[in-house]
Image (cartoon, rainbow over all chains, first blue to last red; front, side, top):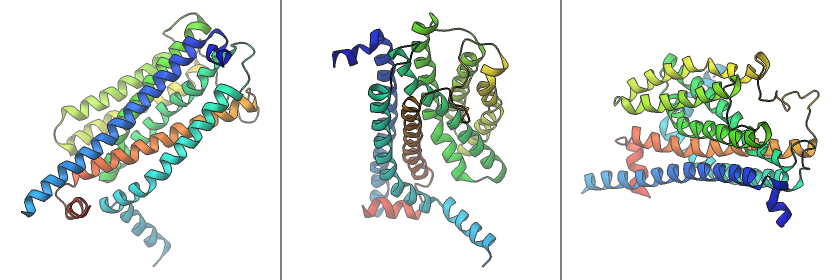
Length: 52
Length: 251
């Protein structure tokens, strides 16, 4: 396990690459999803108010 | 009804906002599942099962994020440029939605290709950055994405923004073949492609399969983002229409 984490001496390079990729992809996913959810809420209010 | 008529009917239905919104919603869970599966196979295969490279040791494992990100940076741009062309020529709104839904994720892939390449370059080439053809043209791609995003957000009118940014995307498409052939046309520090030579790939199978899985996972991830973003864009664009009203009041 320790050997695996060490990546043959390239640990810093390998894990930082994978880490940055994970962070940037997750940020994309989360921000897209949140935008969609908040948009639905906003449109619910928009059309809900009209009906009353 | 002739085949041509049927095809047109299908095409118009596809381009109808309500239908596309529904279809994208049905596709999304499947593409999320597929993304996770291929990402896991690719990660385990690339980090655990692929043998260490005889020259680069375990450092070569950066390939499994770097190369898919670099491929996607160009793939997403081509999707963006093609849809910009369709929008400019035939005024199909859905194409403009696909184009603008792709910009941020495309810029992200380009950024990742540059950063992971830089991190890979340090131990292997002894430098974080060189101004050679491959790296410079990829950096130019990032600026094209940022220019596209900036131009869109600077113009309020959606149609005008779509046209202006679309023209920018099309002109910038010249950069794509330049990136692709840069390692062949110029002498660069960046290595020549080792995967695309399918008749005689210079990479072992147990190294290649995880790479292809990761490439597929990245493509599927882009599809997920594209589906979510285009649903948001459609809602925004059609917010006063009857189908949106029914959609948000019924649920």
